[in-house]
Length: 432
Figure 1 (cartoon, one colour):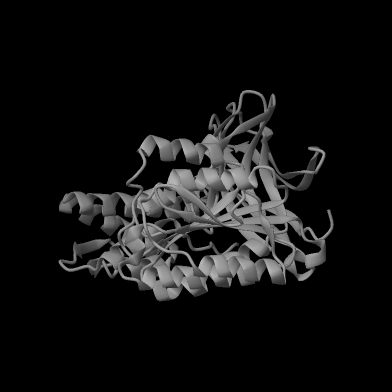
Figure 2 (cartoon, helix red, strand yellow; figure 1 turned 135 degrees about the vertical axis):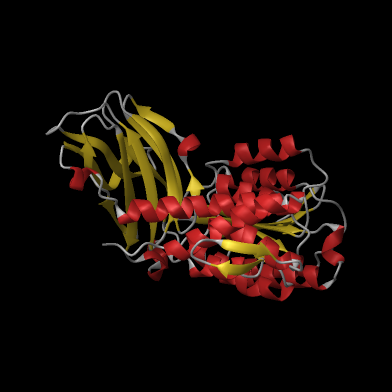
């Protein structure tokens, strides 16, 4: 396939282990560089579904549905020529807003104009059943090849559907398409949208003021159009007797891929990474190997980026090696990899923020203070200034280094939800 970026894998680790040690940790930096969207005629085929919440609550205030209509129109204009697309109006029942016959339109002058006319007539009336919206998108995208992407906007909770129905829908959509989720206002559920985005390898964010929807939809659609290769997997080969303890994307956001494992051979496992354009991501891999003795050297894992072509044949895009060397030199075996330490802290940071905010909602103020204090200390230690700033809107800071904080008595719902929603966003480590 032409127009595809060039991939490379860089490995950061302390490969030295003390005699008898078993656990090997490494950070894999995967970078894709190349023409990307600069050569649209060579880009991979793309299909995009825009899912717009049209429940009654989008009328209160009326600015929400108006902003959603404008943002969706902007997204349609941002699609590159030739992209297949559709618009779903989501309520407690799914309505195909455009096209209405279950097909997908083509992004050209006529297709965009017809779609925007249909979007202009959207109205808000009904309930919220997000799982049914996702299944409708899946039906549209399941037969498409190349880049398959959805953008989901809601202002409310999944009130007209059982939680099990939403979970089943998300599971049915895994591996079928990438989905970016946005919550407008402050009446939606962070855990619901974060769960969808994580499972479908997309992003999640809050747009507290509807006026911000237009810029956000333009940016999301442009990012989707910047993807040039779909369905890339991180393949790990490990030696006999080894166990992969976890695989996590740790930058730009934390996404645990461990349970997404697909066995592709006796010693090979694939972990989905979604679609790629010109970008860089970091992954934390932990492998437990058979213990070695002083002087032993082992290949603990071979990490490959794999793409399956139109015939289903795997192609290795890039590769890196994770090593284990056993030594009796304590200075070597106790050396801390800066990259591993940084992202271990970032993963903990996301976890303690979510725990702290959940405790705050439940009225457990002591636990909330403890968890958010720990979050502040981690944010300071790892240089995550953005998260540190969000924490400062929720807690009074007495000592940022030790994480000594007090919960603020008055915190806007938007500030609290922004901290929770963006808890998984990480700061990149300075390599070397």
